[in-house]
Image (cartoon, rainbow, N blue to C red; front, top):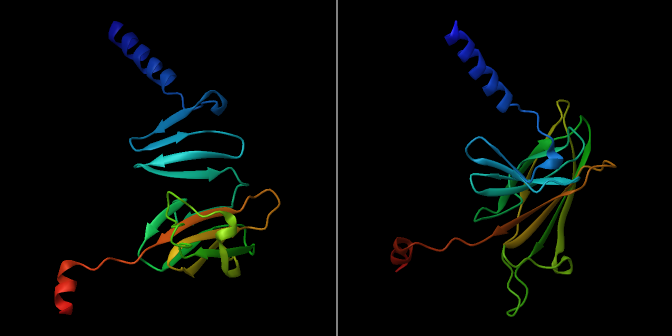
Length: 181
């Protein structure tokens, strides 16, 4: 009898302490699982860290989301980015690409030193539509240097999403250099 009562007490205490309902206004950080940390809550956005990668998510209307790229900024040697996400069916989505190639000798840009808005040049602007199931995708060509991709859903309460991509030239390996000679 005592064993059943003690066991019931432990089960009840466990359920009470693992209550998943948390009021976000009282929190600065929430850890979900081993590698996911949610921090910096405010009315418009919050920051998620997953395996050391930081991503700022906006609290846009439900149904508007960029799935890929999954980071706000990153570097790559690939001159193509695949952009996909979700939006209500038949929604027009404008994807604008702004580029810069590093400025002058005194003003070299990288992910730690981004250009100001006047240093960007609009490279392309395309409007695509989400499909019947609510998904969209686009293969976007990038330029060498800093690229800013702006994804605008055109909805009243949904902020445009900006993604920074630094495209660099791959340095040749020692074997490639030796094979040239």
